[in-house]
Amino acid sequence: MLLQTSLKAFRDSLRGASFCPGDAGYDAARTIPNAMINRRPVVIARCAGAADVVQCVRFAREHDVLVSVRGGGHSVAGKSVCDGGVMIDLSAMKGIRVDAVNRTARAEPGLTLGEFDRETQAFGLATPLGVVSKTGIGGLTLGGGYGHLHGKYGLALDNVLGLDAVLADGRVVTATPTENPDLYWGLRGSGGNLGVATSLLYRVHEVGPVLGGGVFFSIPQMRDVLRFIREFTANMPDELSIQGIALTHPEAGPVFGVAVCYCGPISEGEKVVKPLRTFGKPVADVIEPMPLLQLQGMFDPFFPPGRYTYVKSSFVRDLTDAAIDVLAEFAANRPSPLVFAPGIEHWHGAVTRVGATATAFPHRTPGYNFMAWSTWTDAADTETHVRWTRQFWEAMKPHLAPGSYVNYLSEDDDGAAKVAFGPNYDRLLALKNKYDPRNLFRMNHNIRPTI
Image 1 (tube, rainbow, N blue to C red):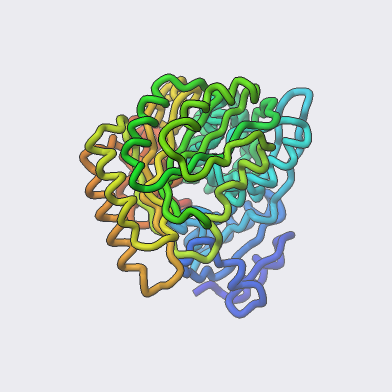
Image 2: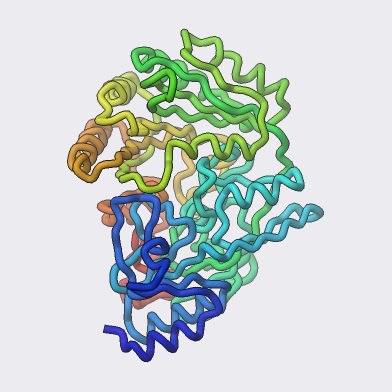
């Protein structure tokens, strides 16, 4: 039990707000989008800046309590909320400064993708981030950062020029290619194992309107569509990204949607995506020129907060006919209309031209990221959805490549960390031993120190 006097002194030391059980706002502050997570921290510190984060880390070390770190709270594993410990809530840290001359943006980790994009797009600039605008930039970036612009500009972490971070001993450090370069390497991809990022400096790029949207096909067409995607993606330009998702369209019902983003000249994009738009017999085509901000919010309606969510995910090197059969079979037998699966994200271009050991993120081989992403609204349906998702995963196992995108790992995947970090695990373990030997930062897909 934390001494109440110590807890009061800690709360008084913060510039930002704090919440304890029984306080107004406590339940709202501990609630994250995934309704499967229902944890109760002893104290939630809504930090106003790096100094508040330092106070949190020092307090947790002194009292030997669990620490979790929340940015946007969109981790499907719910790692941002802990039971009985200190929750470091970064959601109020939303500062951003765009330098249009030097093409950089200095941002705090409480920003969501949409908030970041809104500021950079005011200058006609952007950096690769995710595909759901309500996601927090901090967790997304530290775990990788796949997004619509990945083929042209890489992952979010590939565009990080430097970070400020609070380490487990309470120090605030800057990590760049020349200052603390080992941390610069490790923070970008280790998923929060090494420290709390309080500021990130991104490289930004000129990005105007994009050609975006999607083409929707009936589920019975899915096998043919996936075979088309297999051929279509073999020679895609960097400017184009493509994802395939089985979902329930509000008007057309169950469909397989192929979402696209072309971030080059619109006229050229029209030519590039024409084969997709003229393939088969789509039930709907909503591809059109649009602002990047509009595209970034396109998936938001499918991920409202308050739903139960369970995910299994890994990489697929090739869409073989056998893999396509499994994908189509499970798409036709989703346990509820809200299930957003299967999903495949095509990885190519700039992402794959970075070496597997150049950053802590190792997954640089061209291919597809597979997701069995289940969502539902009634707790009574949890067993059904979890069982279906695991069955899907087992059926896909023969077609999966080793490793997973750490941002998509679910709560029961703690043992997958070594595989997820692949050839970089041993180097990350050495950094964990150096910077966090007591494993203060363990509410993540954890690299357990060995000293």
